[in-house]
Length: 338
Ligand code: A2P
Ligand code: 11C
Image (cartoon, rainbow, N blue to C red; front, side, top):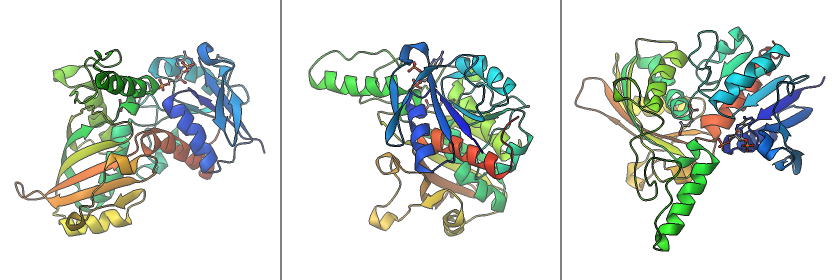
């Protein structure tokens, strides 16, 4: 039969990658609609060797649509997702708008695929930095039960969207031409700098990005007993988030065992050979699907501790790919349409 898919926010950094991913994985859509704001209505976006004409997203855009992939910001998704659901469409939403809603599953297909089964029309795609971390932590949790996680991130500007990619490029060019850099998107210059602030400050002086990593990890892993703490940092990298992750487990997992467990884990590639200077880096993870893990070693300051270095393309596994994998799960499990 017919399978109509809409991409909401099709002109954005993630929306464009969603279209590429649908095409690359041969998602069985008969029709794909590209939706964005009135600003870009009538422009085109590349798809399947041709182009799609972008339509303005309205309350009526979802009539006859089976699955909508949303990446148009939290407020847009709060406004439009309910209309999509009303017309029977399943929304896979990449914003933070619905993630902590108890009525909304928060899904990483390698971790909690069964949670798609209780959706009521909206399924949330987690934050990029959370996704890559839980893909690597779940198989270790299953073996040794993780008690505590301490994560520090090194996040690429593409996580902020198209305008931040442009800002880093522009600042680098301006600095090489002895000009004062324009600072618009971030509170400080991002070129040749590190900003220990992602999103707004909130409770206890944690940023919202840090709070997302903490709460989303517990929800996806289905285990509130895991204690998570985070420091999230923006770095002048275009694509690929990196994370230094320290875990404490109930049962001892040696570095060798961790390497073996992660080598078998779905969606993970172990890239770890110190003697050959082999470890994951954003420049190699960009444009790739897997979550790369390296620098695996025991933390001898505690009894059962491990260090991991986790890198993934934040636009792919961190956003577009995870969303398309959720759409594939919906098909496999017969959960399309509300
Ligand atoms: P537009 O290009 O028309 O502004 P990014 O995350 O890269 O900044 O992209 C954000 C995406 O969300 C873009 O596709 C943008 O469309 C879309 N968007 C933003 N606001 C709205 C809105 N009110 N209605 C529909 N799409 C929106
Ligand atoms: C960043 N993690 O790198 C953010 C982007 O909650 O979906 C994604 C924000 C979110 O800036």
